Image (cartoon, rainbow, N blue to C red; front, side, top):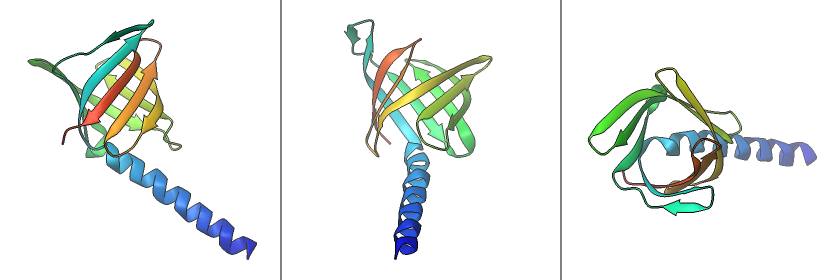
Length: 114
């Protein structure tokens, strides 16, 4: 019986892990940024995650392409554009909302738009 329960927990954990990376695919709008206690509400700032680790950062009329990678435990999201790479801690993530943070950016809250 212990073996069956352990196997079910393993399968459930694996399914959740795979689903998280899949749910990241799409376009996310930045709705709130908090850095050093200052809260801002940016406009027209998006992150687009595509299959195969392709990333696009959009800020108004400008955009930059790069790569993304989610750690095996879904706790670190690394985004690389050109030679700059930022490792974010995933604070919260579901299919519609995502909160990530880093020393460079502070805390970023996103909502999925596509």
